[in-house]
Length: 327
Image 1: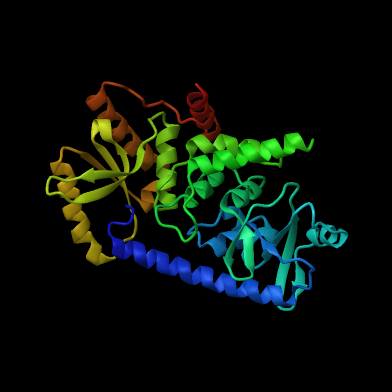
Image 2: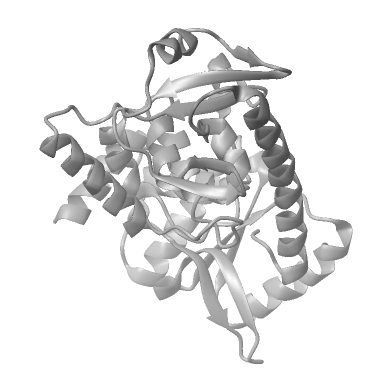
């Protein structure tokens, strides 16, 4: 379940703000001992921390050593690239004082934001594109969703912002007779699968599972006005069929009673309610059962049978969505 009230949302933002502030301090200290002629532009995992995102791709924690959070990732644009940066970029980490820094080169001008006085990082869209060459499609969708949360510490992003940025990159490459950056085609494939306004990566995972089994893309954080006039946000909803699918994370005990009352009110409006837990998300058999029940309810309420006998790959689902986009 997403944030059920402003208190839990505020708590989550507080934790994100603490992590962001620590990273700002680390980057500011690294700038003091860097020794470069131009200011550092932090990128990739470092940029995610500086922008206060609540999720970091799994790749950064596993196989890609240079992307791990213990390193500060710095990107150098085409006008500032120097021979020593090329050498440093091949090392695991160049040491400045107590900081390990890894360098990356960008063949296109950098879109940046100043997150604090003297601390600059790549923008959300630039960071997303830079990650694309290392992430699989699912992680790229998760990262895009994380940049479009309902509650963010950075400027709110939309799907159109990502579309406009990719169009700008393609146009820059065309005008300057260059190849587009690696990963840009994967980014375009990810776009139709992404959604604005999610609350957690678990909600993204749940939505992608539904799509892979052929179900329509559900509405994210759909606003439902109850008969008493109160407003609730439904994690994933099919409004035309009055179906609500909620992710139930590990809430504190005091929230359980309030959530139970909320569920009863939603059902009283004629909505069918499905609950998915953290454990169910990682169990293929349980998730197939959930998808089957949701598909059956959709068929009963709309007359349409969406369920596929076998799930599509995410790439196949993306191709179908792109066809709808361009149709």
